[in-house]
Image 1 (tube, one colour):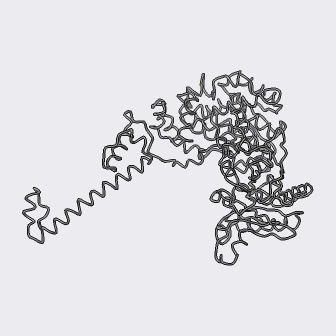
Image 2 (image 1 turned 45 degrees about the vertical axis):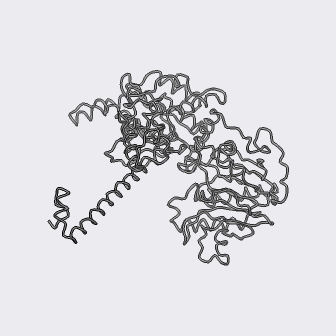
Image 3 (image 1 turned 30 degrees about the vertical axis):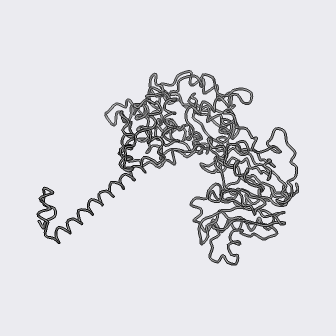
Length: 631
């Protein structure tokens, strides 16, 4: 049997266009000899349907689309779809052919002896020409393949993560959980992914299949639509020979895949962000974007990615020099625009800033100075960008990054304007890596060298630099933020790693205090383990993390641990103790309360005996206070 993996993208809910695209792909697979085509779980609902799962109207329209596809497909097709029925939400597999559209899990749940069993608890298995094909539809089922399956196809969407090799397709296979799984299995295994961006999620593609001997049978491209095929035989037959394809992973042992070098990882991240821009703009029904060009690194990288995503004719750079803008920044912005071939609009803000500043001062009878004066410039630029957006019916791309967002180094309703923020999950040092990677690809380097080397500055006051405004260099800020956000390390733990305690406390407290601002920033692609949008810290919060000079955390935990264990536990013992500090304290509290229970129980027994024998006063004499007598 020849199975086709249809790595395609779609617009969630655009059922007519999706069905047409699926049929076109199915006919292509049929012409190339496929017996079964498998579509990705994202094909109808995107990465996750979220609140749409509660809409019966959406679900019914989707089922109609499935029925329409089944009436016209030229070959048997497995189509995943997210379903909300009387049981719960789950991913169903629909086998479609000749006008029949059968929900596999729901059908299997109605087998004799499984009365009232919810489909979500049933494996999605379909037998074709004597081959058992299992579809893995959730992380809970992501276990080594069952011995009774000939093929297992993992279809759960895997969102791109720049730090997770499992999201790199075959290229990250050696470091992913799939490697051990496949090594222990004797059946065919495939990863079926869609491709495209869905709001914050990026589904990178990279679908592939591995035969029972661990040889890569087929592989799809990353970040592009693709169609791949592999021939399956029963487990008791020897797998067909797969001819190696030079320049690809196909035909080579999966366990020989090498770890990607850092430069290629940066390239994957760049391509993922380009895909996110392209899909967000096009799937939202737009064609053109605006990018505010400051001459700095952030706007340069966003403008370059937007040009790669949409084409130079669909990107316009907006220059808005103000009273403190340097000549070099304007020159860098113009040089970038020329290298990219994009249009520019220049709207100086010096005169309007003076007019608005004076008008506010006259009405408020107070000079506009300091931070208010700086933020006024940023908000004027935000107003210009959003006005041009309305005038030209195009989207504004925000140019902020994760470091600035974490530190609140952005002006609400100024720097934070825009429909989409491509770098919201990228630290400042990674912005430079993206710029350097892009400058080494494809002819002329678009980003000026001076943009890469000059100190970052918002240029909102004379001689201003980011480091002076933030108090610390980005290198230090990013290291602390990564340990705090990505690794969930406390201030004390970060300080133990050799970081300046004063800097750690300042950075973490600043990050905490700017949660309110992040709630109002534009959405953007998630590409890390812990995006700021998912931290879930409350806006109003009186607690702040801190570093203790004597590091009493270990001392306190050692004290609790000693009480819990009943003997003195030194620091060496604590280092080998695997329980978390919170668990240690809870155990010690239980030990302490148990001891109190024993004392109270003992005193109760003595008191009862004293009362019954009339010896209460005598017992009080021994204790030195009246506890056993009636008094």
